Length: 61
Image (cartoon, rainbow, N blue to C red; front, side):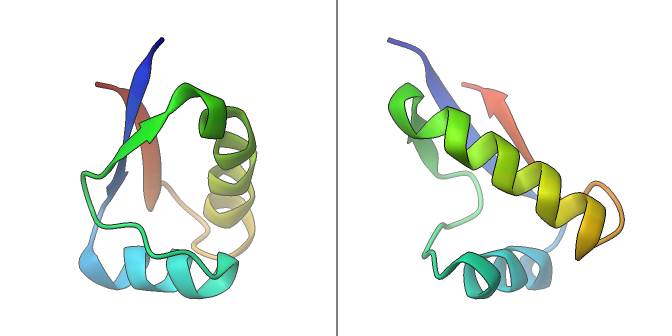
């Protein structure tokens, strides 16, 4: 099982992401591989359409 970490460029971006998707992620929080695929597409959508840049990323922990 792989573990990932969700990382925000700034605290306000994480708050925007959580509000946009009704999540409660904290910067640096670990994400299981079962949630990774869905979250990956949401991060891509958020970065492209809301933040218009690399605001949130998911990396392997």
